[in-house]
Image 1 (cartoon, one colour):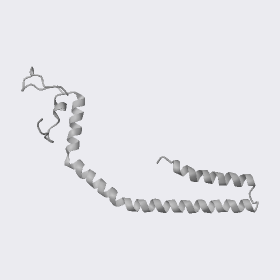
Image 2 (tube, helix red, strand yellow):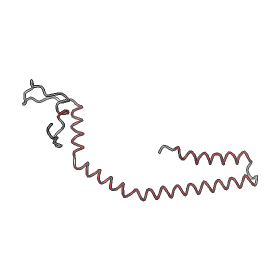
Image 3 (cartoon, helix red, strand yellow):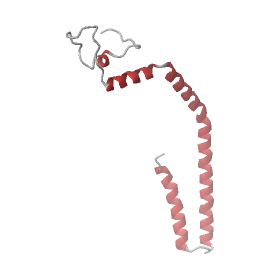
Image 4 (cartoon, helix red, strand yellow):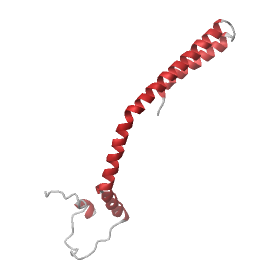
Length: 124
C-alpha cells in the first residue's frame, strides 16, 4: 500500500469506489456526479488553512471565556437558591400566622419544591 498524499483526494473517491478499468484511456475525462463534486468541495474546505485558523481561534476564545462563564453560572445558582429560600420562608411564615390558608400554603410550598427538583430535569 502506498502512502497517502493529503493534497490529493483519496483514490476510492477519485475512482467512484471502484477499481480503475483498463478500458478507459488516460486522456479521457471521467464525468463526476454531483455527490462527488460535493465530496471534493468538502475535502478542499477541510484542508484549507483558513478553516484551521478559524477553528483554532474559536477554541482559544472559548477556552478564555470558560472561567468567567463558570463563575457566572455559580453566581446565578446561588442567587436562585437564595431567592427561592426567601420565598419558601416567606410562604411558611405567612401560612403559620394564617395570613394565607393552609391549602394555599401547601400548594405554594409544593410548587416551589417541584420547581427545585424540576431544575435537575432540564435539557439545556
